[in-house]
Amino acid sequence: MSLLLAGLVGCSTAPPEKAMPPTEAPASAGKVTAPTPIRLTATLVSPVDITLAWQGDDPEAVGRTVEFATEPQGQWTIIEFLQARQTTFTHPDLIPQTPFYYRLRSVYGPASQAIQVTMPKGALTKKIQKKDHSWMAPRTVPGGPVAKQSIRNTGTTAAGAPTDLKATVMHANGVKFTWTDHASDEEGYLIEVKAAGSPDFRVAAVLDPDVNSFGLITLPEEKHASFRVRAFYYGPPSNVAHQTTGADPSSDG
Image 1 (spheres, rainbow, N blue to C red):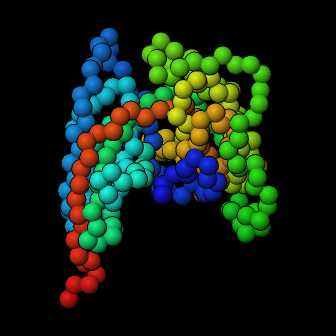
Image 2 (tube, rainbow, N blue to C red):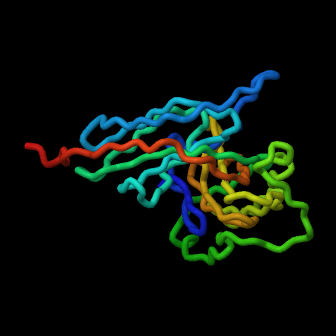
Image 3 (cartoon, one colour):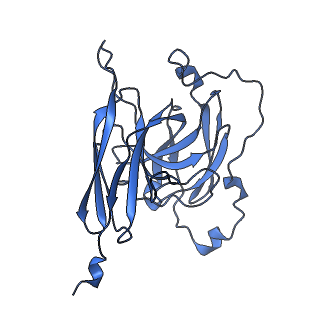
């Protein structure tokens, strides 16, 4: 997996070029573009590699998930959070002779202001790994009364964005984030990171609703990085595309 799912604690391990997170869709100058339905296709490009391609657009979406299952109505698993502008994705090195089903879901919701974080020099040593990392656990920290707003209503979406994002460096590779939750109807929160020199943010962690404290183990290239948190919800799924992988190519000959 290229992202940390809700309730899990651990390293953010995806290469930045594969885990591209939601970014804000550019607004048309004075023009509202109606969404067009996403039409997803799947092509077997090798016996164990499947490439997805899609057409359609939703100007309000800030990203999409690509998800798979091995049964038509099966349990769906998120593979990646993708940029809203992305229109292809390859799922490589799959189990031979297995059916794979795919769908996309648009992601919506407002993000906090980004903050810059500089981590101390040093690697994630065994000594550091043995330290108490209970601070990483996703938590809902009680605070004073805060007015909550719907992020699904265009009139209140911006007011539902997280605020007061703060980062506390815990050690050379660990940082704890806290923020104020203003959303009343989010499906969860995304921790997004953009390493210095990277063109885009990527999703580092997916958290449950109402969480406002979480710790992350950063990647080596994230010693200087920008972070933000996004209250999000999913749109309806696209059509389902299907392919069955072929024989194991390593057994040829």
